[in-house]
Length: 497
Image (cartoon, rainbow, N blue to C red; front, side, top):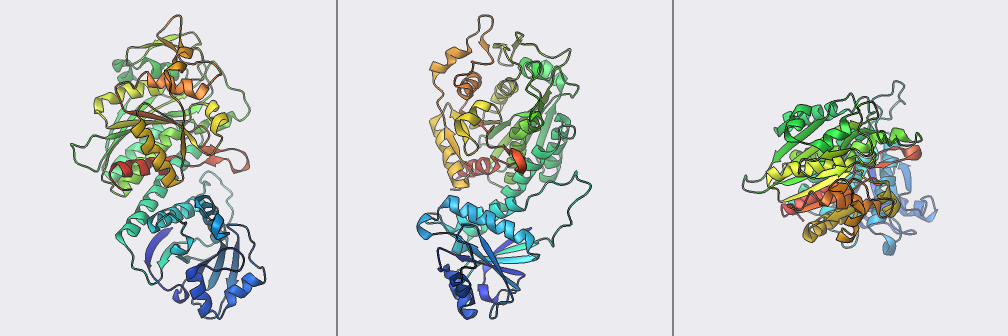
């Protein structure tokens, strides 16, 4: 789907579909009112008749409206003006995407300013509209042999500004949205692939493709490299698997060499059985999503490279499987991490923190401006925050504030949780420097406290995306989060608010 933005009178747009917005009751939005004049009041009459449902995101399709050049008019309900906020905006765009998928139009025109939310500027509206439509059109069906006959694909969307010149900010917002959507789609697809396809080697190959496409720097460490470095925690996780591990380092340099990089570390457990501490069988298939942190890092770098963002970013992905077997790590084993600290592994299902701690120690060599790790780390975070917000932990409040702001700006929100020393006592071990779990109380916090022990020399934050990276049930699938948050964070660090 191609997007463009230009000055255009909606009623004169010769397109397969013209989208016009309606607010509460019988009220049309500004550009919709202008189009209604050309149509002799036909649109308002449809509202008066009650043909358009009052629910935000509801649509009504009209064919061959006299006075309007488009073949079809799609009325979109935004909701009551006093209740129309960013959440309602998202509901409206989701409803619009669902309707556009089924009407058969090859192109559509949307007066984007009519969708604006009070307090949000035009660039935000442009960016979030394009992102929402792309999300709504995403589908993963490449492994199905019997596919539903597709409706005629919507090939292009024009965001129309009637009587208003297109600003550089609006153009930049659209370019950012398209690149971010490409990155989020990559993260979704990697997450949705089955674990017999998306192995650690597959993730490395995908990173190499990105490197070739965008001329990125890349290095892939294999088992012998990790052994040479002394990554005892990462190697402990992969012992039971026949799939060899990978440590992927992907570099995007869009700013001056003197600018310190933002480092993103993505947990890449391509399948998590729990190891010897075996998970219950029910819904274990969803553990293919345990590499969602890795997918989001690759997706974010694709997005930033695609828009040629003026930032330096290094993506690091420790990738392996967590499997049981005769060689697998046992509860009670003690390993030495890259940092030299020793860890008693009390539960092999707390494996994400083991691969991340070695990756955090590894990235010290890059002298980063800041480090953010992204991981589907704990079920406890799902209990705490559900599926709305990612859990945020940080040892630097300024970095935490930047992440929170990026989340609000992208509607890919996070919520900060405590990282107090009081919780560190739960990680005490009688036999090693620390244990890898702290018991049931405050599980997501003690997991973050474990990671914090390896990040003392860094400005560091941890995003627990266990509740936000995928959906379960009938709509099971990867969400692509938190690619939008990570992209916004990098751009805000580059001065793009």
